[in-house]
Length: 401
Image (tube, rainbow, N blue to C red; front, side, top):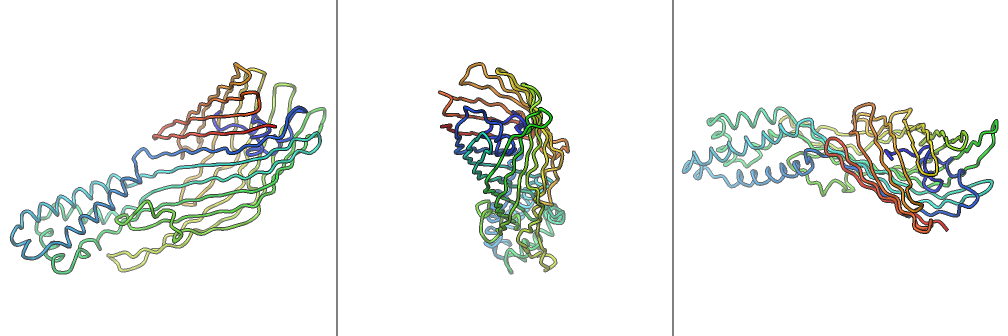
């Protein structure tokens, strides 16, 4: 439903979004267990990570070819050596120009919850995690200029070939200093939600709070683009972690039988966590360059409204604050709309749209189905598609008893 849920979610799943919704259970509602709720979304229209891996493989092959050069071999076939080196230089320059300024990113999440509704106080045990990853490059224009000169100057190419034959491939590769960067973050929460409903001026007002332990793992995989290997992204060499306390709060108000308005605040305590400091040697200057980022945890306040009947639900959510992550990335601020129709008691059909009003993330359409045989087992499936080749999927399995 376009990522909405602050006012419209069911009491069992709403606790993952707005803890106040836990108090909106009915007298006949039972203990609900979500195990699990999972989803993922990826945007990579240029197949960036594979392209960087290809460059790494190509430079390894070129390095081996250069290391195999001998002065006698060059003198025996100068034109063949010239064509081979110029072709390799031109192809590599083309790939670097293609990668310049491009990024790919992915998000994933998962959660489990055990919700125990009550006539007075409702409680839930919650565990959830959100992951974010981003791959980008820092292309050194001097790399491209050097490769273009090598491609277009037979004299320079022959000089470089003879130098490499005598002293090794570093004569050429030390002039190549572009960098590939992989940033990753996993934030996991473990908490107990408490919610209660009050009457205020004849309006049912639900209030909820989730104090939680919060663990964060960060990855700063930064390396020469010519040695990048996607399998090293999760290496402990590039990882650090942090543990602290945080809290989520929420409120929901019912206006008559058909309208609900909600407000949620997640991560009310702010903090900044630095990644590991990775240093890379620049072959041209002989100096180390430091690469470090900071992950920002900030309060995320979202308002929502829901109109519902027994057959149809319409909902809308909007972030009142920005979604922050790594300081090196642009912030996002989302709005979403969604609809659900229940033509049968055991079937729900859903659709929606979510947009980033800041224009820094892809706008997406969502669709899904919900199955509830015997109103005991609940299976919810979601698909996501959007601009910039954005794809995603999600599933949730829950049981009430």
